[in-house]
Amino acid sequence: MRIGQVLLGLIALGASALFGLSHADVRERFRIGTGATGGTYYPIGGMIANAISNPSGEARCPKTDVICGVKGLTAVAVTSAGSVENVRAVNDALIESAFAQADITYWAFRGTGIFDGQPPLANLRAVANLFPESMHLVVRRDARVRSVVDLRGRRVSLDQPGSGTLVNARVVLTAFGLKESDVKAEYIAAAVAADKLVRNELDAFFLVAGAPVRTVADLAANTGLIELVPIIGAPAEAVIAKQPFFRATTIPADTYDGIETVASIGVGAQWIVGAQVDADLIYEITAALWNPLSLSAPASIHKRAGFLSPERALIGIAIPLHPGAERFYREQGLLK
Image (cartoon, rainbow, N blue to C red; front, side):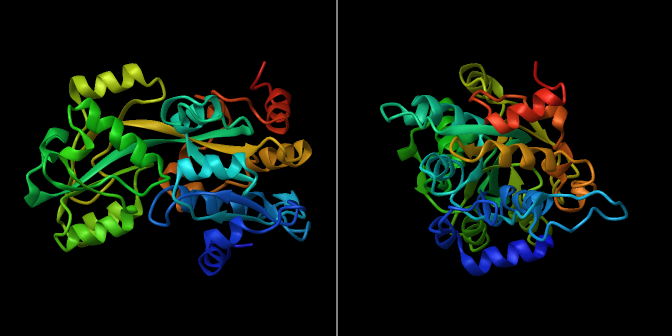
């Protein structure tokens, strides 16, 4: 199965339709909840779905006799609102697996942070840490926004409900002394926000994703209208100190056309799965994920894919590993 076929199938079926499918036989269809099409989760999800799929049981890795993927498995990447929606869908067995930010996963599993006062989502299990994400604060050049504090009174998208970006944008606003009511907030996906930015109906939008993000790259290359605002200084340091999953990150100068190096904060992206999913299946999926032949050319899909590595797979994991994944890592000597 080609990655393009996976993605085109998703567009035709839609996320809500896939979420409603029966998963009695997950060896026929295994879903990976991702995010909006303009973000990073979606292309990486398509790449991983392609890597672990082998519906015929006969497909072989190129130029070798090695069978890649899980025999009999068709994996698909599914669009969604993002991390918050994903952890709930996985916990409630509406979908087999999904990507989510490390902070969202941690809070959800423990019923803390933004999930304070709610029952813990105790069915969440980890498969792997995947790649680092950075907070993008995208602004119109003519808006003259040089810092987060300059967003006061501006038209700002904090991203759509159910996204990890919305959670993190609120954290950043608070750290810089702003209330949500201090900005003219909108709650829309990054691709929609980008369109409104071009039409001068929006001054800025937040997006947490692995750089480069297609939506931001298209804006930079095709319009020349945007800048990225650094998230630095004492407020950013306070966020990192208070939220252990955040860290200082850098978006290099060659990431987006016309934009110099930008310092920001970020968090890890993780692959989670429901506790009820068969352990042998997750063992095979984990082995297929880290088969070096399965992901032999990841950078051709997305630069963040170059971070995928079994040696980094356990970094920042703060919920229980799925038994199938744990078995694989122990066998490989990556877990004592």
